[in-house]
Length: 75
Image (cartoon, rainbow, N blue to C red; front, top):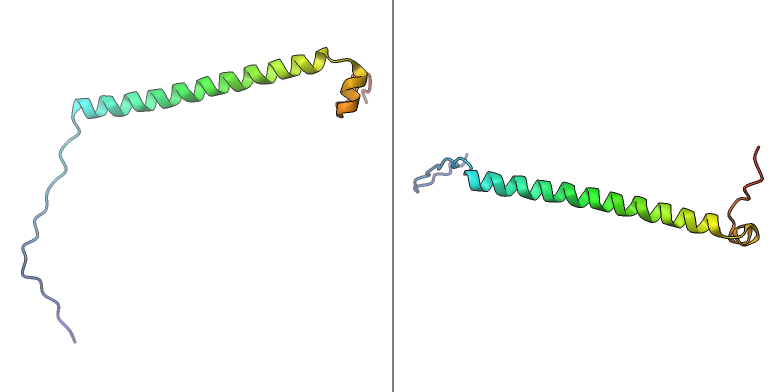
């Protein structure tokens, strides 16, 4: 059997409570992250609407050549 000993003293330090400034910085970062997500979603939606409008403005034969289904083919 082997016994392992350590002569150095172990000291434990407690974490200090977060300061108001640290909590505000964390909240601001979270808010900025959410705002960036909303801005990206808005830009994506706007781009999709713009692309759909551009496709709708094309003549039917050109849309058919691109592989877009014809508007008069409903089941």
